[in-house]
Image (cartoon, rainbow, N blue to C red; front, side):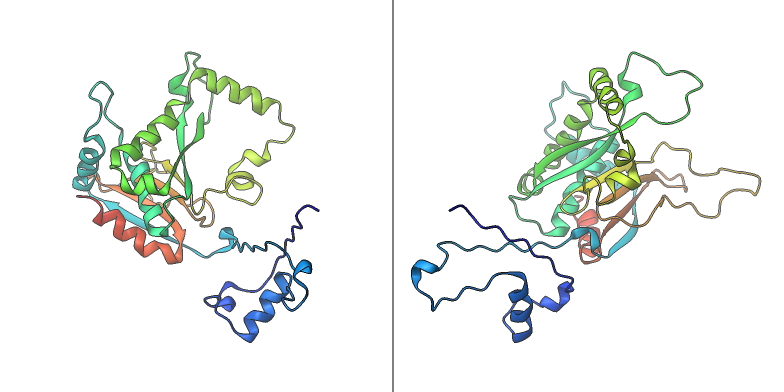
Length: 285
């Protein structure tokens, strides 16, 4: 006879479900979302198996933003943690690889995800450095690709930081000259490129989702974002924000104080932010 699949949507707010304990009001809501079974009916008229999955749209949850400082000492300790046990034939991990992996792991811990939960990290890779073909001097723009590192939460939170960072490097090293040309050919074949743009793709319902349980980390460490004078003098304040807050979006910046410290801009759901801050500092040994 096959399987009957029913999908129901509700505009009811999450807090109205409380802890999903029984109540007349809750029973009324749930009764509207799933079929009721009459268990007084003959057994041959009752379903052999009935299961219900409840999902919450993570994109609609409220987000908070934090700008967190990692001192030069913090960064040095993270480098030691990440490179401990590394194959000495390979080059040391970069600051970006280390911090991206560390932020990814801290976010997984802050979200209190199950060990079996798959999770991904979006990182940027500069294709210009990986190609024999050089761009024209007149070219104005960037040639960065966002690539994805994948794992599960249990691996990321239980294994050494070096394991997490190795996942980041594996993703970045996928960007070879062949990879770039294949990507260009693929984009040329697409009739509509808007879904690949930041606002219409990565951070909207039209494209992949880098929020819970995922993260995307961009590097602004080498960008000349401080001290720009357009005729009105040096800036009073610089903020990396280019749009509204999106869960799981992070950027790493140099500190304008020039003391070797770094700034981590992090957007997370409100309920996860304080835990993220604790892990960001307390997990550095």
